[in-house]
Image (cartoon, rainbow, N blue to C red; front, side, top):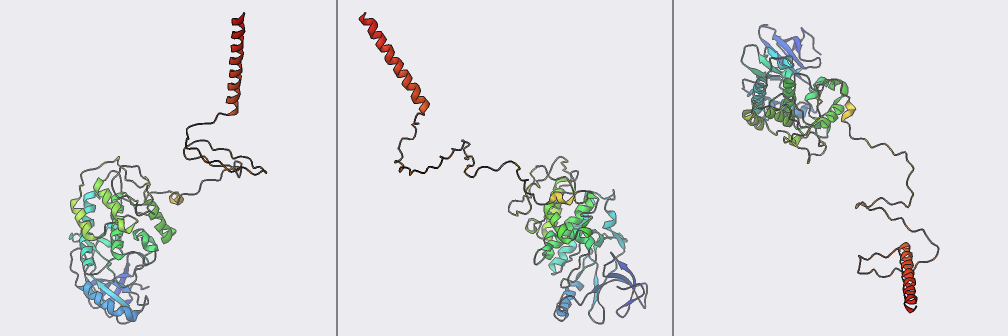
Length: 394
């Protein structure tokens, strides 16, 4: 990678890398006029067929150059010649929102304003056929000149996005499926995680870099929608849950819908005792609910420490019973709860054909004990009758 002092293109000299260690964005100054600075983002021409992508990149660059929004860093030039291909972007001096995670001055109202500003910027991008695919607090800057929030590090839609391991938290869980995530749904999900982190005051999925993309995706599906905290406004909690739903069709579908929801939010009503329903498995998209139900939910959050990952694995089979196995001819109890009938012992003699069933079904044949008692009573009655006759003759 480039080092400070190396040159990009004809006029740009590298000052420093912006962002993480694998970032392809560099702060540069103009060789002839050092006070002129720009953020230069390199494009990797080795990804895909460059001959096919080049014309598409030129068309998309025209859309990017036409973007003019107070919450977007302006794109000033695109260079596809020479050994290095790059985008020239306006350099924004400011404080990234990532530095405000956990800051006590961050209120629900401020977070809603920041998310609304970002949604406005994304709305213009999406309307022009562009996608960001790298929404995170580090790419949202509060301008040093006081002009509000600015979304930076815009990439070309055709170029293949490279997700750094430490940024897997912002990648939707369906990214590990064939075809990958829808770019618009990706932006919406990442904005939901950003909102959760700012409200919660901690990073989501802190161990994502060590766990890997597949394990993080599994954990996201197991956790379900994320709740930023019981003490926050109820409607804001519900909104964050819908933004971070692991099932794409359960999320807010467009930035316009998000902007509408943000404009209608009630930030005054809280209910610390209320719990959303996360009891239904998110693997069943037809049963997972998004409504307020008041049922108890999992209290752990992806920013908490020391939660064993296996707690969210699929249910395991119960342990095997060590008792003696039942006999082969045993029968399970009927569903009506009556005891099972013991089958008759096999006999070597042929059995007679069964008689036709009687239409009368409420008569129960007496058992042998009952017949013996009836016989004894009859004999006693006969003996009593004979005794009475003999007494009468005397």
